[in-house]
Image (cartoon, rainbow, N blue to C red; front, top):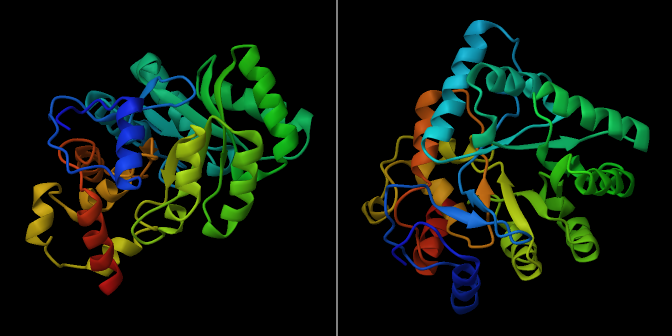
Amino acid sequence: MSENLWTRRDIVRLGTILGLAPVLSSARDTSMMQRPIPVSDELLPVIGLGTYIVFDVESTPANIAVRKAIVDMLAAKGGSLLDSSPMYGRSEKIIGDIIAAAENRDHLFLATKVWTDGRTSGEQQMNRSAALMNTDTIDLMQVHNLRDLDTQMATIREFQQEGRIRYNGITHYRSSAFNDLERIVNLRKPDFLQINYSLGESEADQRILPLAHDLGVAVLVNRPFVTGQLFRAVGNRPLPEWALEFAASWGQFFLKYITSHPAVTCVIPATSSTKHMADNLAAGFGALPDASVRSRMKDLVESL
């Protein structure tokens, strides 16, 4: 394909023909690739920003300035999704401080989570998240690691009807939870599913990603670098020559393996470095590996 904006029909067609692996695409560099959220067809840029640990800092002018620069880079390159959680300490507050300083709320897709037990506690936590992030509407509220799923999902869907939340979702970060996730996705058909998936943790290829694709569930991907393990595995090795067609760094190599799967809607690497943010964002542009190249990428990493 020659366009950066893929339609839902394109993704379904490519997934059917190639077993959920898109062709090597020659893409324009003027806008970040976007994928549709299946439940609404709203387009979401493929590279977002996670905030675990890296946004859990004191709200000092220096800390806010660094993270504001990162969020500004995200928006300037066409990205939008910021993912947080009450579990991430002060991250939601930092996001709110950035929004207050930049007045860029309309350009951001704010995703956070509920991580508590009981209806009252869940309502209070969700309301507090909105207040901390300086927003009246949370774009995506996810049940963090399936905690008290039935209770919290019921509240999220009520809040959706009231216009306080736009999308619902469920999350986990361990492949050992995939059996439970498969059952829940089949039963509840959430708008979003957030899971771990990468060249170092590719178990989602087996059932979860095909299931999400078939049921029209958007997929966010966490742990794209397996907490740095992939970078440590490649060390100082140069990129192989065959990879230079679609990647200019190992970070882009790892991220493009993920975004080349058409069931993936957005990947959310976390960083507090503007240099790393620029490199991550570059993975949202340009060519994508096809099925044979993806296989070669996986063989390479498994050989290290």
